[in-house]
Image 1 (cartoon, rainbow, N blue to C red):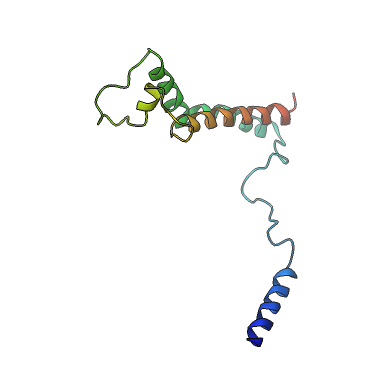
Image 2: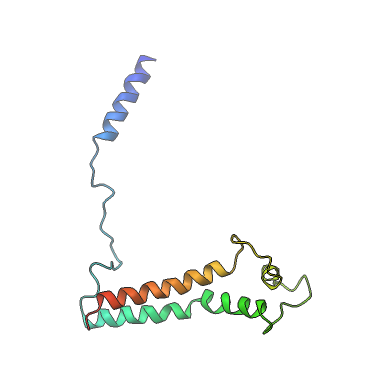
Length: 125
């Protein structure tokens, strides 16, 4: 028991006295907002990234069809086996906040807004 106690104390001392900067690693192979953009080509890349969010799958397949189904513009269909079981609650206005669908769509939209804000803030005019 005494050995276990000394072993535990030694392990605790070694873990506390280990180096502090071990987990503070600078990102390698990716750009950070602080160091970007540094040239006109970087500014062009950042602007292209804003538009790239519009090509996201969730942008086109998420909210627009669901919003159309919630209105009178489109109908889900009446067959329960049509593969759109997650859309039915939106059609009936019985969806819950934890339901899959619109959350990814909104996240994609806000990702595009965030990218546009970074370009507006970081790229000099």
